[in-house]
Amino acid sequence: MLDVKIKLHRHYLPADTPDQKLFILLEINHEKGINSERREFSAASKNIFLPESKHSVNEIISNIVLNISTIKNAKINRISMVYPTQSEVDLSLKPFLLGNAEIGDATIFLIEMTVPEHKSGKALLSQINLTYDVSGNPYRMETAIMETAVEFGRGDSSVYGTDKEVMHYIQQRNICSMIEQAESEAANNANKAIEILKSAMRTAIVLNNVSMTRVLGKAVKELEDNKTIDKGTLKTLKVDAKTHTVRFDKGIFTDEEIKKITGA
Image (cartoon, rainbow, N blue to C red):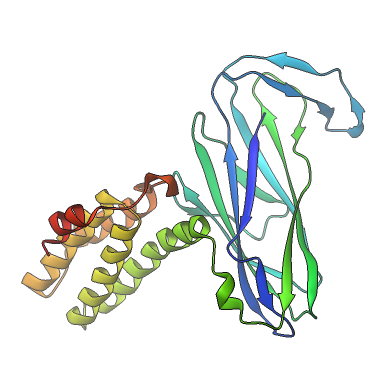
């Protein structure tokens, strides 16, 4: 029914180091009109199963709930939808309510957590599963439990690198934060605001986000020309940063495309 993928931005962390930040990518795919085998269970009892059946219908997947258990003393700091739009999940509601799945496209979330100090060795970090509703089906559906593990060691963690796909969505979310920073600086320090927006624009270029690159470029020019930024421009920036998102698999700009967009 749902194709769910999880990835860590790093699989190796230094041992005996407290409060390390880790990101989990949660990608949910719901293909329109595909054949799928499913097992249904009653909301009243997960032990009552109905016969498996095959369907080829345009089903709506809704009310997705994230159940996650973590290593002792780990803390979930933030859960964000990062594609196809950006929004924040309310951490005060547990289990976590993720909303609906896009039909024919991915719905992608970032789980940001703090990992406690741990001795050397491989450790189970989290167990994740989803429950959800399917249109026309009176039963809640459930995915299998997915586990994430990380290796704690004493070597140089930088040699192991980070996952490029997960970093893509972290950087995409950071554009929103940079726009907010620029807004707070614009009234009193236009040059600082310009510097922040140019940094956001460089990030958008690397992510191959053509739309955001152009909108940010327009805002930079407005600040350079007027030493201020219009409220309408700020509103456009904020809305576009949340709605003009791109998938990781879109690739990056060629050198020639970067020159055309940046004017370099």
